[in-house]
Length: 479
Figure 1: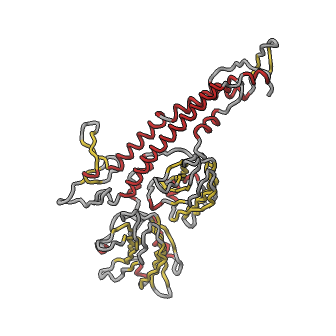
Figure 2: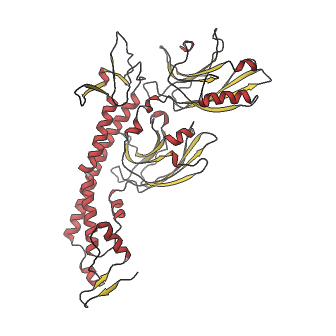
Figure 3: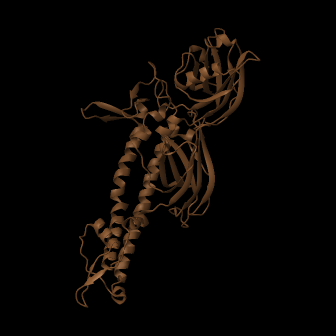
């Protein structure tokens, strides 16, 4: 659309075009405009050196505040994640943080107001409620509240005001010179952390989520040389822990890294795809200090369609901590196990396959476990049906690929229950129970369906993923 001019030769009144009308509508500055200037007049209205210096000083101040705030928030979040990783108890019979067992002769327990887990008084912080009653928070939840408070107040206190000044000044200058400026583009330039290209594929048949990290562009420099050493790490929320953390390799001295790596989560169910969110974080690796957070993006898995690859090119954002993504469910999850069942007509027995585990709970101080699996076919009064796999050292995602055989008549199989437990092997003390699952006529949901599918399909191997529960089965399981 062209502008229509009215008035004398020196003063031209012009009907604004659609682009100008759209900009003025966003800025709520009215509908009239006094414009049309020659190229010479436009050049005469360029910004003076003093004005340019003012803009540059504001931008520099905003960047400095942003860096300070980024480091501060990063340290708080890093400390919170370290506390979560170092938690060794189950929050029921043990202190969630230090693992001390509760009892008459040991420490008393208090219940955390936020996560509803039990901690000892040394690992809890007493607060006053609205009715002046004593309320307790575990140190993790107390630290989480602190991080949330600083993240909400930090943006308004530091970088945000300066950025608004820059954006307002640039827009005002553009209006004075009758230039069209995209408001969102200016804001993006003032606060960008970079973009990340990646793709996601949910393989429904194999219960796997494939995450291909392609490349990033325009990352924020974090090192003194104006570059970064970026890598990408993935977490599934809720339930973020070392068990479900995946990461790419680190690329040195670049702001435009190309990874082209595929990271895979196994044991992902349709329920997970509805309930969980994938957090993708870009960080800068530092050999001598803590790694620095650059930015993140989050994808609710319900956006994906089974067996269809979806490509993303997302702008990175700052840390965002939502209480619903760090609730007590993250502490209840014990991991997953993949089991195969087959009744062999030729051998007249049940073949149980222990294939692999995923996202197991960490039981050792180093943030890992030394897991192995035990199986029983019950009822078994003499405990002769016990089988166990080899121990896999220092892993939360072990692969076993072992099979056990139980000689049993097909008619008797419907009366039996297969109990599978996962343990952490310890030297010199009792092994720690990680989680268990029972398959049989008294089970329900996927566990019952798996058992019936085995009974209905002789000589056919049926594989299923099952969620481990934190309830220890019968007394025969004490290890």
